[in-house]
Length: 181
Image (tube, rainbow, N blue to C red; front, side, top):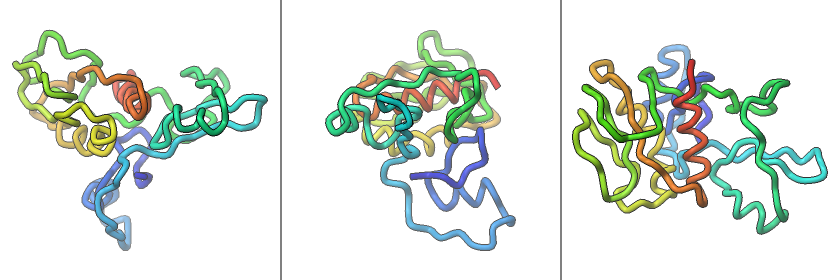
């Protein structure tokens, strides 16, 4: 899973992204190819009576519940601060503003699409998964956000993604990308 990113930035999924992020400050980058999952790890809090999902990731809630029984999901914006890295409300954010709707395309706006039915009228489109596959979408999320984060664009609109399986983690990352900075 990706991890070589500055807090608050879009996570890198290739060695080239890491180089863009850190430049000459790194003596060496080991290139193992693009990430297979694309999302950071799932984070659980196991200190209470019931497990609490702090950050959904590559291991889905459904998979966890099959092994652990019912789990709770942490509320956003914990008053005592985040319990885990990657839990700030504004995280994984491109420079451009992100909105979690795609109705009414704005001038110069890009679209982060999902599935076969892509609306028209956007300046640039990146489709996370033309077939609507959440696993494929998770693999492509951060690279697609990086490609859309261009200075000549005005913002990024996002198509809806179902909340089942990896969709929950995708929604989490996109909510954080869209949070005010």
